[in-house]
Length: 112
Image 1: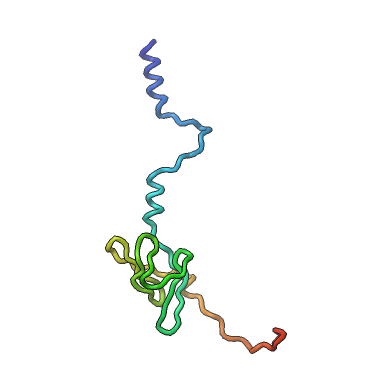
Image 2: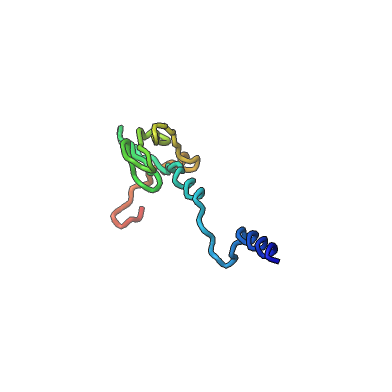
């Protein structure tokens, strides 16, 4: 009888309380920390280039995502983390966006 009780208690350790909220896993948090930054826009003014990376306006030399931006190119950035360089590009939809041509000049009240 005692052997059955011990065996049933040993098997109960693997059971999970279905009413308890899910607990975050350490592996899932590690994946988020190792994620690459996302480039969403590049701005060029003369020879000066800036980029929107993870929602922030950055330039060469700025730190982001545990690394440093080494350069901003016409379609992405060169990002270095832990001595490893990564070429991060804008997604295809953002890269193909073109500014519309200038429209007709408007008069003071805003009507053409």
